[in-house]
Image 1 (tube, rainbow, N blue to C red):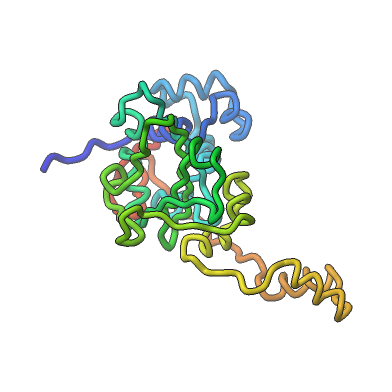
Image 2: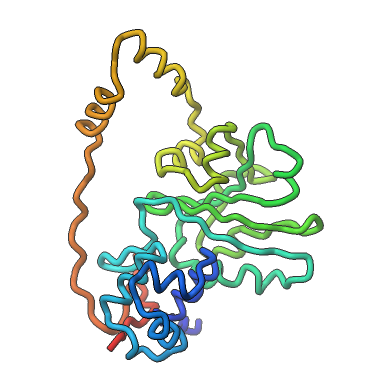
Length: 258
């Protein structure tokens, strides 16, 4: 078997920028990098960015560098794919395939509202890609005559969430709205993917709080005491030859940055 070609850092960022729909100006602003320097670096002139600038850029793209390279597990990631009627399937989903190592071991399922509207059925198709350390929503904008192709055939090393014929789960209208509006928390993502039903609504909690005289400050304090933020461990020192993908341990890109 031929050895897979290593992916350079600028190639990785270019792929991710395509999926998150972020142009060079926006990337430069979020990463605090001069636009021209970033443009030159993306074109392959690695001396145009310092290593720290590259690391900042990786963070903006949703990557976490910690003894390897992986998607940040503290957030829900959104990737977008345009599958128009005149596009070639292979090229449309090529970025997903090239980034398969970031998603190795994940499970895939389509998701829709338990009470879908006609416009939702015809416009976009949403997929959840998940593992213990990955929470990814893939949104496919499709034409009426095209069936989306997010599957283990595209994401190498992934599998379907279940053995059903349609590989589809449903969720309630509240979580669906959060999903579509990119307002989904990691907790909500996990409950949606694992099909955990809600026995108590926020309306129920609000009513109980009023009845027993519990204030918003009381609830806030309880949440902080029970679920206080964890301080992440420091990232290890990196060399300038590359970063390992956490899922495979294979060195796939170079981070030489001058």
